Image (cartoon, rainbow, N blue to C red; front, side, top):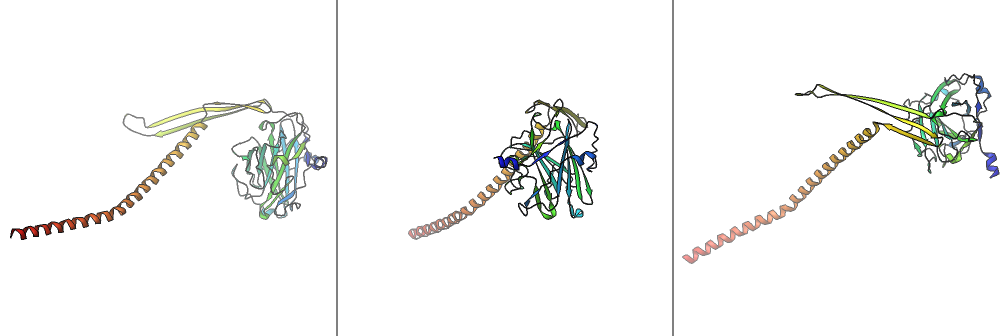
Length: 345
């Protein structure tokens, strides 16, 4: 146990001076970045599991009372071959070069926050859910419907690409008195199909496996603000349905919002006023039900047609038998008439 503790990877966050000016532009040109001690020892998960990463990566972390800032340096021997085709937020970056970070703010080894970027500045985030996920590249323990408030800027350089990620503490839930957080980093070099991690590089592990994170230490005197988040919405619609005695256009407007409040670092209250999310869900459900009904009707119609064809097929021999019986009856009648004439004679 002692040896495992001594071997545990850790990174110390540097506290910024109150007068420090952080220019979030993707360039690590400010003086304080040179004073922050980086995490550097990345190990391949694929293709050569356990070998050092072929392209060096350095991660530095600084903070003040209100935000956490990561400075990432991704050195690349062929910077012209960087891939960053995805530009939409929260879309898959698996086909691009990318950098990922997972943060376990409660150090419970189960849950956390996930952030990723590519060399073009595309961003993705998610909540890391408890469970057996996190192994390999599947990352099947992510809830990507979560959208946090954070900012990232990237810059391409002659030696690769650099990035700065700013995460306000009000975006996260955490224990302000915790001595350490769990943290892990992963980098993808897509042209080599190379995945390298700071910790948890085994193929059945991964960046979102919170039980195998390293440690982020040095955080102190953090503030979540008042813990209040307000998200209002306003919707409108206009429908044209001219007719006798009806206005040419029917206009509708609606409003509402969500209010989130951090009662404690581990408890968040949510109040919804006239939310439109439920109507969207019902609308989707109604459309699905409608589609299912039509499909069911079409299946029934096809089945009915087959049954009718089958019945017609089985009825044909019976029809032929009936016709034969009619012919036989006609012959019998003719024979009876012939006998009747003979007797009369």
